[in-house]
Length: 159
Image 1 (cartoon, rainbow, N blue to C red):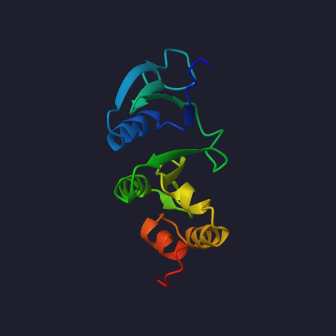
Image 2: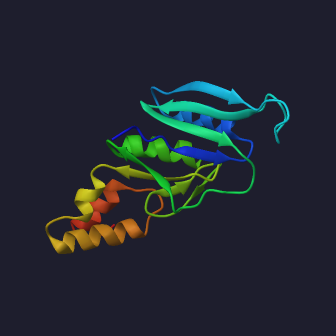
Image 3: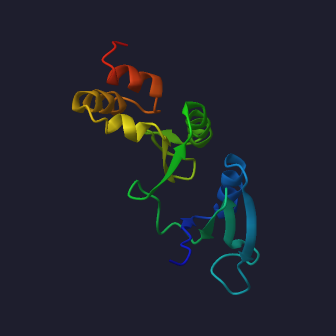
């Protein structure tokens, strides 16, 4: 399959967003930048597109006006090795953004992210249906995922 590259539509903040994401994710960088030329609907020299790489994955940010905005219908999952890594991304991406529930958030640009510790899916799909139910019920009450609390609930230990 050829490489697929998400292209995110921003209203005049593509360069700011790309620089922000590069500061959040390790091993990231800004790539090629294209700019509006003369006679275009945006002032000459303004960023049209900016390519950026987040830990080896390429994205494009496009400055294209207010016609379209982001929604939760599309989100990016960050599969985190542990609670510490999940907390890092949660803290960085909610700075200027807003928390939702079950590990979902919107960053300061309105882009939706799911911050998921890799242990979470196994807790939610435990072979013991009662453990899985208790873990799921605990997660549904959370904004930021807290593995200690979900494990405790799965084990039937009161908080």
